[in-house]
Length: 229
Image (cartoon, rainbow, N blue to C red; front, side):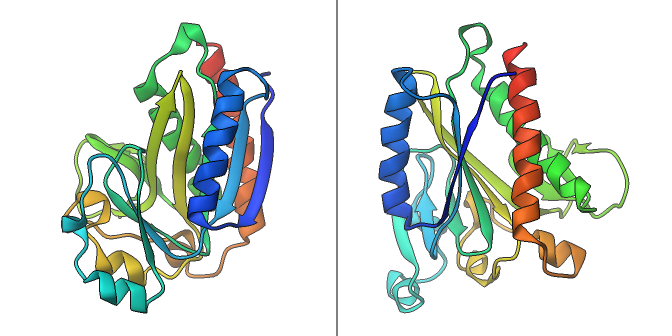
């Protein structure tokens, strides 16, 4: 099994985390460290990816400043999303093996990690054709993949970047966070799409550390399968 080093930063400023990610990515690209999974949470911040713009913010910068929400433009894929305390952030600093250099496959594999984690807690998570990330089904049963969006709410966003086949940036997974700031944006640039959280779906606060543990378990399993083609 490929070894993964897990680092938990706790609550960490987004910009500082971004700098540290890039440092670790360089070390991984140079084979000076092993594949590393960073878990963290961020103080309130909006991040805008390569395909995003401030046009998808529905309120003024002054309004966000008054709410102590920063705005940061970054080099990951995707559009705009929100990060805040109570949201699990996972940054896989993984070097894709030469025989499996398939970014789309890697993203789909990470989506399944989130789907399996949600379903272990009883939340009917699904993926949707043509949409990145993980959503909560209005149904309580299978399937785990839908051909089209039909009002499902988003529980997890995925926005990765790669340099020399080493991944950074990653996954945001809503656990116990306040969902109000999502109403200030067109989530991921998708008008009409809404966010949800594991605690909202289950109707109770969720043990954050237990979610982290289950997520790590499925990330380990995914990475082993990915490396074996």
